[in-house]
Amino acid sequence: MLRISLRLFMSNGFNHNFKKLIFLPSNGLEYLPYASIKNVTMSLTLLTLDKNASNTDFENIIQIIERYVELPTSIFDMFVIDIYFIWASLLSLEINDSDKYVFGGICKHCGEVNSISMNFSQHKTNVIDRYKPFKQLKVKINKDTIVVNLRKTKDNIDYTYLKLYSKEKDNITNIIHYIISQIDYIETWDRLTDKQLIFEYLQFLSYKDLVLLLELVSSYNHIYGIENELMYRCINCRKSNYTTVFDDFRFCVINPSGVNTNKIIGFYKDNIEFSQLSIMSIEDYMNIPYRDGEFFNQGLQGAKLLPRGF
Ligand SMILES: [Zn+2]
Image 1 (cartoon, protein in one colour):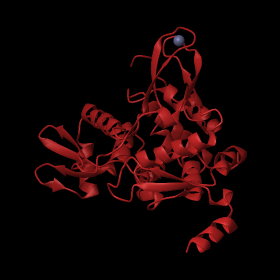
Image 2 (cartoon, protein in one colour):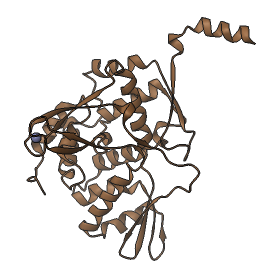
Image 3 (cartoon, helix red, strand yellow):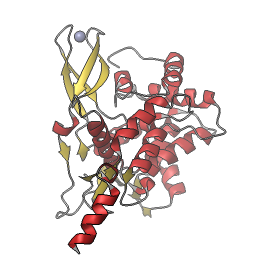
Image 4 (cartoon, helix red, strand yellow):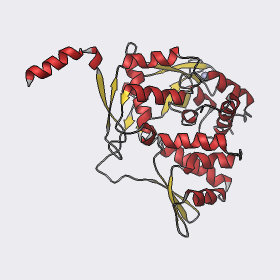
């Protein structure tokens, strides 16, 4: 036995066999809590070389993860917190030389563009305790209870499709499209599980309640996984700023073939305006290095920006 395994080891060679086992923050909630990363050094090189592709960041991340990571289940059925964690692990391995991940942040006080470096391996990650009953988010609005699941990759893709192909372009529909796939059921005069009924229910909420729901859902999505809030001190004015490491709205954008680039620009524009609902800031869009920067910039130019402090 020993001889056989030794020979296998020798013939495969050490480098080709490289695998890094990582433990996922969802910790077995719905699927095995492990993934293994292979051939790490190729991953980000490809991302930076392939600049002409029409893929967005989110699509790239999906493709790179599917190619270089052995996942416990389909990536679409995986929780977003796990995907962020895997992506951060890839980045950490990739940038092992300096052990730092650098991104830009604009100071909210003086406008200085700061270069923020973070070390993913030392950044806190909250893991689900598998020996305690898992709590869904329960939001009470009026006398009803809205019960929400943790966000999955497929929820982001649902949102993109709903948004790109829906005739209604108002903010209310946009918010509903973002959260509806995460809603498990609504406890009201009856238990609503049918998505059409849930959609109609949400349409009748006040704008204020809907925004509140969105904010609660957005923070719930980061209770577990890599801690999303990062404090940094501006190099110019020395004041503190808070920024998010992962921006959920940016990680929703995909560019399905057949959809023209104006739609993608519009998507960014809407999401930037959306971001003014105090959930996140424009600065948050600057966080992760992205390739579809041109679409983003055009979206930014077209977006109606509210004064600071809104
Ligand atoms: Zn400053």
